[in-house]
Image 1: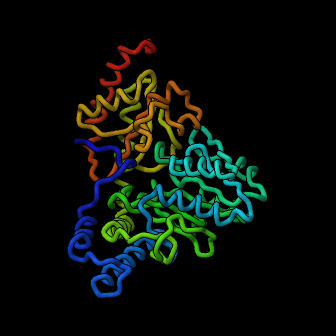
Image 2: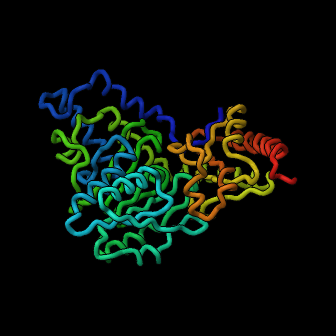
Image 3: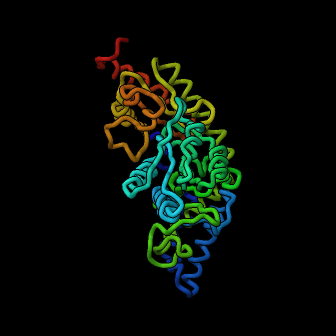
Length: 384
């Protein structure tokens, strides 16, 4: 099997799993209890908090553990919205956000919070001028993703943060696709809140974190006990949190070298596919793009058909976000970038990672062109 869907999820690193295992059956204490078994679990949670904070250049007290990126996004948007509605209710986001943000915004709209959805250019970059014009005295939050999960475009987060600060508006970034892949420094970026998820960088599924800068007004998203200093109730997922901490430590140590290696593979795959397949479009910014992500649109062919044929060859890819894989609608990201629906239906995303090698690139570049050729041969729209 050739796996090229690392933006959907990653396999848990064996070193991460090894560190997690004792907390399932040996060190099983509840971190909220006071005896030594429980306190060892508490210490493991706090060590993980320090590791995540170090990866982000944050204070450990600013890290809140969650069940993943979706909860972290919902926590940020709803927690800030409800805590600051005495000042205003206006929220600004972009048209290409992950559905964890978009659907949270739609929910808040029904609760009386007006939302502005910013357009993007052909590369998927947010219109900065439109953003600043959208800010009103009622604006309380801006939420723009760090890197897009489908096309890989990296947003000008520092510039947006400066604009938000100038207007006294909180700024959240969904960094789920960026953290663990590229350097992310919350102080350099200037963000107030940031979401991340362990399974995007070789940690376990079901655990993530929300960075909340000290002083940000935010209400708890889940009510119950006093875990996470009263900010997120529920007995901590100790094995998962330990795994997140270890994944953060490994990412910080190995990120730079891995970026160089994977980028070469991604660039080679892109070059070969562009050479071998006529009439394809490479999506996303040419330079400001995640080093592992290659999104293409193949004209006159459906993405789903290509994926099924690739799967027969043992190749795993996607046609966009894993969270919308069951939808028959074309990617909202590609449509926002101005790609026609009939072309967007032919999208493929290859996202490479730790276990990809040169041979994988060679195989995909050999297998995909004849698949496209055969599908086009039976397409009523392809004239050859």
